Amino acid sequence: GSTRRLIVASALSRDSTEETADQKLSAVDLSLAPFWSLKDSILDARGVAGLRVLGLADTRLRQPQLALLLRCSPSLIKLDVSRCLLAELPGEETWSKMQELRVLLVHQNRLASWEDLCRAAAPPA
Image (cartoon, rainbow, N blue to C red; front, side):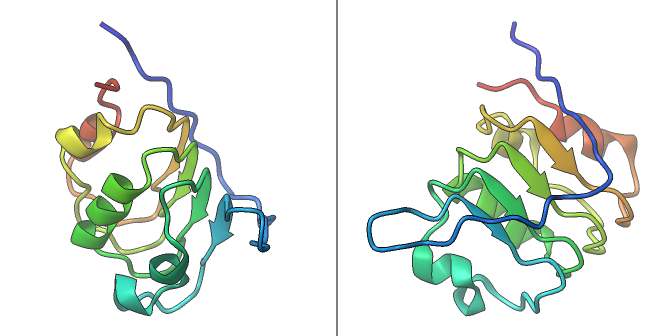
């Protein structure tokens, strides 16, 4: 089977591509932004399907919101959910659909088990 190689880095670039009339949003950094619900987020208004880079560090994002974001944004290559106080990550079935994901930052969360990280390293389906 196929194996996935994830690179864990210590920071996410703060550069992002702004949306214009003829250009889709490809990178968003919402680090430190209040993230109470997806409908309150910029992501709901503009969509996440074509995103390649998403920074959500320090947003207190919860596992159900993260699972929904991952299902809606299968093209992500880089995701930062560090310092979100996550106690668990979505299941293997969610991560296995993330065929493009190469960089995942999950440091300084409240993950209780090694299995959480193993699920995130599931090979693409």
